[in-house]
Length: 265
Image 1 (cartoon, rainbow, N blue to C red):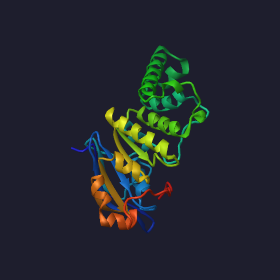
Image 2: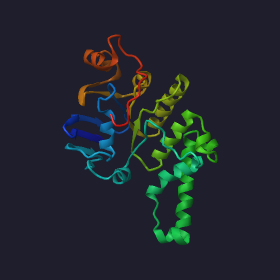
Image 3: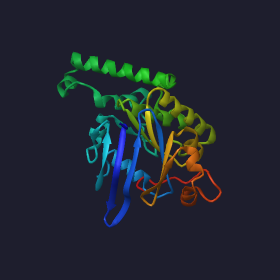
Image 4: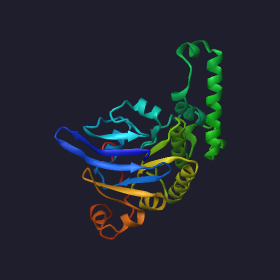
């Protein structure tokens, strides 16, 4: 059974069908990419997966349980976490504090424990801090624990945002254009970072316009155009698919699309 199964999901805004009967799956341990032209509906799909938008039709099944139309917090607790095209860190908080924001969705103390700083509160906070330190060190961010997020280079900020998502105990990471705004060196480092995440056991679903990233790290690719799935397959199959080339990649073959999709596309 796939970790994530998306079955015929549809999203309608007024009279506009933004996504129509899209189906795909993500297996445990895979890196799966969704690509397509600007406005194709990719981010709308992500917003349905994470509870931001309600699904008008179809189902989303994660780890054998239906999760469509649940609240975002419920979906995070189920094991799905996302990042955004525009980095959403807390810039004036330290690196470890940003990660602790992710940790706190799973802490096990009550309001009274927090209010009176009980033994249970202190123990839970100590455990969360140690988990955050261990995670940051495993992702080669240990040297930045006490630094402020705003002081990190752009590529490292992106890694920190992903670390915060992992800290929620996510089993599926949903990455929305992680290479957006990166220079070639940062993109190359990001590719290595995402592959490392997979080697650590993470399952990853991403939207990405940088075709060098998509083609180098994806196990499988789905292509969306005008809200519909038009192709799926291995990177080498997608690269020569004439329908994909016509709809998205251009007649010259695979290229990098430097445009960025607006969040509500």
